[in-house]
Image (cartoon, rainbow over all chains, first blue to last red):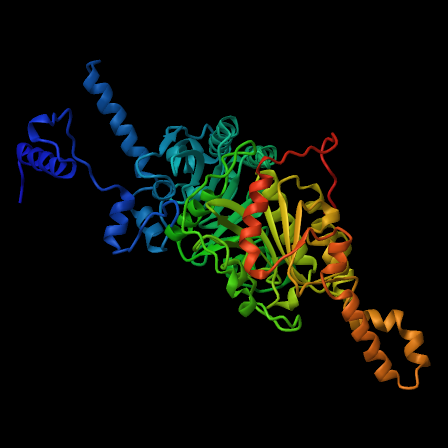
Length: 58
Length: 516
């Protein structure tokens, strides 16, 4: 399913509003770019690796 | 072509793409098939998400001999840069096996040296990820000189910034000396190999046939040679291990470790169940550590080498502490050559980086025998004494059970500068055990007795009553307090709190001359 730029931005804004409790009219989209999986993320996905990067206190 | 922004930007993006292709899709696929990540994937796994910044990505070799000028080696086979680990800056190099086998030439070495210089200037840890076929033969002496430049910097940085070496592929010949100078070496079971001389040369020179894994794999170096400190299954878990280790360490020798609040633990009331009162019965000292160290915070170092001594980092109330402990469950916790080396190296690392040391004592002796004597136990054992004496970080000891003879002295005794020494009521602090002592000092009386066996037992009982306890040492000031095992954590916390502001300077010297 291919989404238009406007649809993607709307979904992102909606998610932010839900997360932060902020009203949509208070959100201003400054810039937008497509983020691709990094090579590492792709490798992990391709090989079904269960991976979690070590975080402090674990 | 028209000189405009778009063309220039497109040109740069194209160059970046070429650099990031590294050795090409086929070689990257081959790397993955071996269960190995690429150089840049490893950097991504090491650093906090989105923080890695690569430097000098477009450096290439200037060599022209043997057709080198016609070979493309993106980034000259090594990725260098900086990023954050738990929000703190660190620098790293990561050799790229997909590019010319990760071989080291002049430019390759220059890149690593530049990153090392930056790490030293910024007083931040340096991590080197090794995956290389070795010196680039086409570049001859320039390759060797490159290695020398790296070793020099490892040495100058030693004790100033933490240096960690991660062996994720082959590391052969002189290249091994960089990891050897670093503070900690990580290896993976799957793909790590380290040896000065590989199996082929070993066979041709000595006739010995041996596989690469048996000569210098992770198992060998973690259990027999003592070269490696940590072993993991694969690249990802290994790099997670590096992150975990760094969480215990400061940025440099003028810094202090982070306080990492975790679940505090006080199960010291179970110590009398864990540690038998009879000093001839064994137990696992790691169970003791788990009664007072913060939950899951103990990171053991070299668990499979010199198992008779346990060393590692733990947290107590969120603060890093280095722990040195005799392991009763192995060789009765005696000290010998390998344990002395392991203990001394760890103590000196803690002292370099302002990490307080907690010593748990249950040691019967330095292991006797001609193998130990001929192997140099005198100079190796001396390392423990030297390391403790020279350390100016807070030093706290808990004498749990046996503490006999020279081994008692070597395990952070009062005379070596321990700040606080506690002892449990079952502690036995003496020159030697009762049987051995009576055999010497009671010989005449036993020989003269009508019933030598009863006389011997009578003298042993008398010796046990008089000397095999912590109270003589407490009366003479060598033990600060005899404590209940259930009071252990409370006392350790109080001692380290009190010692937090400790400052001690040693007489001026260029550097000491520790027996090697």
